Length: 263
Image (cartoon, rainbow, N blue to C red; front, side, top):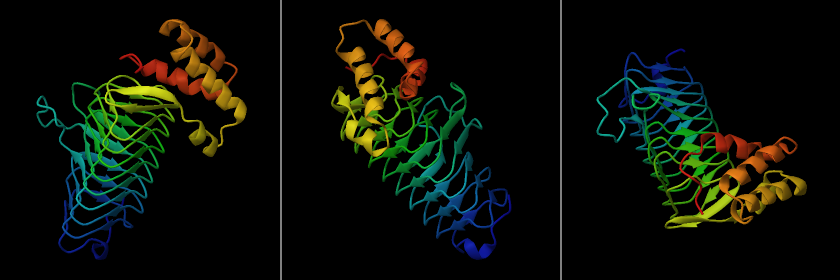
């Protein structure tokens, strides 16, 4: 990866000589980029942003002012180990977003996929894994070791307990406090958050057919309204997923879920 010509790096920015920046990267005033950072083509690092740690950013990411990417975990066990943060392409990190590297108590890796939208003051804790096309509204917060699957939306001031799983296409209302796993397609809200149905309107906007949405509603009813045990409902949904591809999101969620689903 080529270093950017100095004309694209503001004179007040501090960029380590060992950092690797594509020649198209732009770095704003007073930004700081550390020794082990790699930044891909077309990315923009705004004024006062900090990118540190063993951090890789892909292409076309935009890091806004005062964001801190690759910061040390907020974990008292962390002793400066060379753990990592890997970020894909096309992500936007708004003002004062914080994203921590991993810890050796887990896999030593925090990861974020592609085309995610993190609004001001959102926080991604250590060892979290965020998929693609997610939205974190202002001050949405993940504890450590959280998995957030594709197209999930977390409302402003929501908080997710460590080790939870947020399923694909799930949506948490503003101020939600999530202490158990949130199944795919499911809307939750409240402190403590409870399930409120599926996000039918959002699924229509994303191109899900009426038949697919009906299959998802049936799966939701199996989990929440059938009177069956969790294990029985999971078995039926897995069987239905063999013939309805839209339900594959449930099987991926079940493979990770360990805290029980919120009710």
